[in-house]
Structure formats: C-alpha cells, structure tokens
Amino acid sequence: MARVRLFAAAADAAGTEELSLEASDLGSLLAALRARGDDRLAHVLDRSSFLVDGSRTSEPATPLAADALVDVMPPFAGG
Image 1: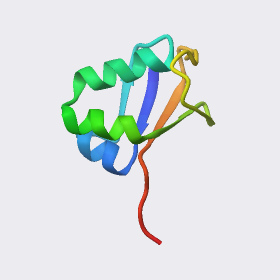
Image 2 (image 1 turned 60 degrees about the vertical axis):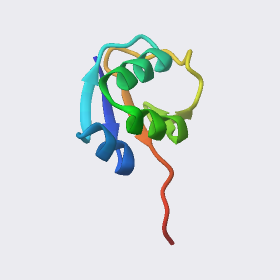
Image 3 (image 1 turned 90 degrees about the vertical axis):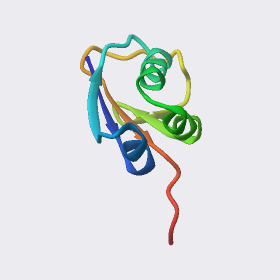
C-alpha cells in the first residue's frame, strides 16, 4: 500500500495527516482520495503538488510501488 502524507489544508480537509491506500498509479490514488473526502478535499487536491518517493510529479500515469510514499502539498501562503 502507498503511504500518503497530507500537509496543511490537505490534512485539514481529509481529517488526517497520513493514511495508506492501494493504488497502482498517482491517478488511481487521487481518485481514491477524492472518493474518501468531500468537495473541500477535492478542491484542495485540484490545487496541490505531489511528490512520489521524493520526486515532484503531476502526471496521473506515474506508477506507484507497493511501498510508495506520496506527499500531498497544497499551496502554502505566508512570508
């Protein structure tokens, strides 16, 4: 299972900072996350950046290893 870490607004919208999901690629994982959440989570995911095992990607076809680490990074504000 892929380990998913959610930060800031993504964690708030999901109600957790970390979870595990079964998914073969980034697109499947994001679909599973959307199915678990509400419109607020979908809104945050639409604006987020993603790291898969430390590499930034937005490509839904990005494959996920069984032990993948996916970071969901929403836009951060501040200065």
